Length: 111
Image (cartoon, rainbow, N blue to C red):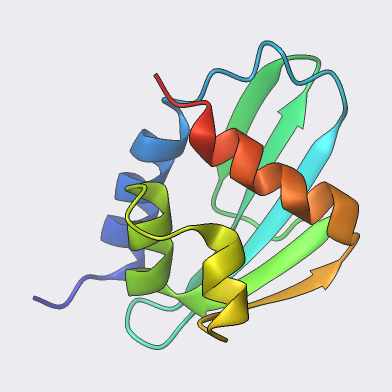
């Protein structure tokens, strides 16, 4: 079933917002570029123990992830490890690799 960007963003925001970021003290800012079906851009930011997920570009980002909506859904569901997704070339990462690796911590911290 095809999903629009709005549907993909809405679903991913719901899943990301389940993360417990209260232990993450550093500032993290990630931009996600969804390519292919439902393409679009959104960002995830952790600031002062609070999580934001918004449908905009984030110019002062730490890292940028580019992948399909399907790959991102699998990662958000915990069905695919983000590091494995990069290894399999299903996701491209640019920027600060140390901060990009914290994305896995974010995914793993969901309640």
